Image 1 (tube, rainbow, N blue to C red):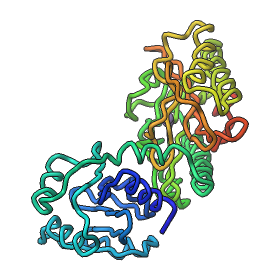
Image 2: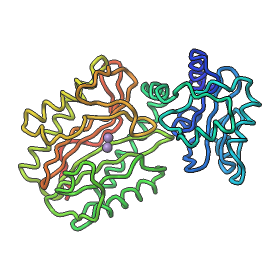
Image 3: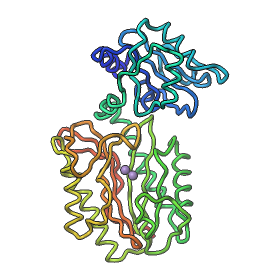
Image 4: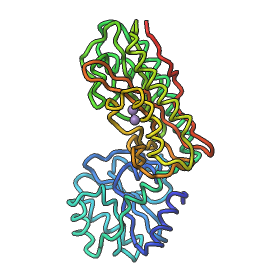
Length: 366
Ligand code: MN
Ligand code: MN
């Protein structure tokens, strides 16, 4: 039994619950090491306080579950079978206590809950696993930290591929395709979110997309990307100048850089998330660009790029060693430019350790 599964069992005991039913494939990956999105098929991890846990999976995934190192039973179902009746049979074969359930309330749909209820009429959905999973994700283990650093190294290489792909007239989509081609050719299994490449004024839309917009001399080019390493992800942003840089672009860049470097140097255990956001925000505000910093400073990162931590104004979450999040100040002036610099970091005993290391002083790509 892994430590993570044992912690679920202890929680069930404390809460006096009979069954933990996990249906979010991210949670199943976190707890078992088996990573697959079942799309519309049924994938579940079922854990009990005492009895042996099992995984229920589409038949075509059963070998992959075993190959992922899962040593407890895994049961498959074929597409013509009723998965809920089978889950009921396996459940009753594993345990005599099947009434009090905890489910991922933020993930399990009402439709699926009612299908479970029909197949297992005694099931009562009492506990919520979603907050428990959020809490488990908050502090990274040494093994997870190693994987995050590996994901960061791949992101650093991605920037080098990206910069090489810049030339006059190239489109954002072409650069995105080229950098992902080079990265995957070098063995990276995937991106952790849709790569963002934005040139010139287009980068002033921080939630915009990668488009057919083309690169001109004197544009800034923004790259926001992340990679996956053994289920753990990176998230980083660099902004570079193409062929030349104006005084105005450099001035704004230097403000963002100062905000990023200062926040990274100041971050440490015991500080609140809101205080950290404020350190970067004050620098940008004092420079006169406060109205153009339109998002929080950062967010939690681990097995996905949207974990619960919010490095945001007013958040009194206290930073602790092992937490992992982004530090990503930006200035977005509509019709003019967008600049963001982002690193992923892990809180240590005395500060933070970034796991992306691409240079941050303004680069001019010829
Ligand atoms: Mn990002
Ligand atoms: Mn981010």
